[in-house]
Image 1: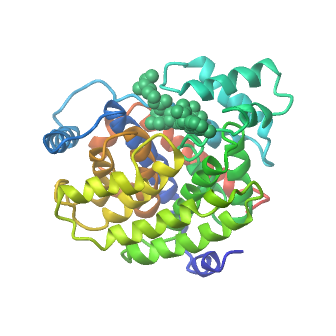
Image 2: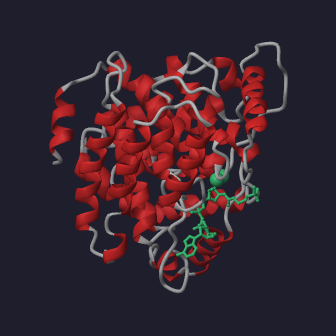
Length: 364
Ligand code: F2R
Ligand code: MG
Ligand code: MG
């Protein structure tokens, strides 16, 4: 077991707090997805940042009425990962593959990418004979390094929070059903380990962003070193990105230029290595005030800031929201904001069921 995990595991949190963190994490993931989705693919100017500020003010105004903000593939796939953990006492990857595929065919218009749809088609056509094979064949055998593995991984971090090694193993296999490239897998592992670390951090004691980041960095070094498919030029991508996060966190937070630097150095795209570190940065930067994001609430600050970076806004806000919710718990999340999101009641039921399933699980 990683030494940091041992240290955190000893600092036990109240069960009621852990449950609130389960709820906060999945709700944070949903809100980031729903609220970020209308901006996916946008380049955000300084004027747009003011528009986004007003958008959040409206969404938190109890008198504001609007149709639900709809969730996308990020939440659709997260639902399947949660069900896979809740319904089966032992990991059954064929079951998970079927859940992904059925979810897609029931509601194909949730903004899935073309490559992952091809994987679903192959899984169905081959009758799930080898659930990892279709993903391995994508991109001329290189596999996908999209952020689709990371965006849905939150339930694994929650369910296995007392069993780090099982968490890593299950997160890796749950990702490999659609993403076999080492960057796609390790991106999902980084997001998973970051949620795990946020979950085990006491919200009564403020997070020190630098310490949080360097602990993550040590864990990522271990993960990147053991990856059997490693190639020399990509075996420390995430470890290096975490170093960049540490440097960026030390900069004066008062300029537009800093956001440009964040986008240039960390990325805001659909690739795992250009979005997972960005989401972690958003969460850590939001532990302190951010000039363009006027709110006292650090949960809102996290997702609002993620959206102001533009690009893959639903997914970066979804991952950043999962981190903020796992750290702060449900009570930190504005209920008016929550009510604007489709599936808000159901996601809390899923969090409850996951919490209960985990209590009775042989692996915990
Ligand atoms: N697909 C989208 N957004 C596109 C616009 C949607 C539009 N708003 C709509 O409603 O239709 N968003 C969702 O996809 C992202 C997660 O993607 P995932 O599941 O990882 O998919 P995929 O297809 O495996 O990878 C994504 C792209 O990454 C590039 N890529 C990946 N591996 C590659 C490789 N080995 N070589 C070259 N390119 C590779 C490709 O461009 C893939 O298409 C989330 O943002 C989610 O919200
Ligand atoms: Mg999406
Ligand atoms: Mg996206």
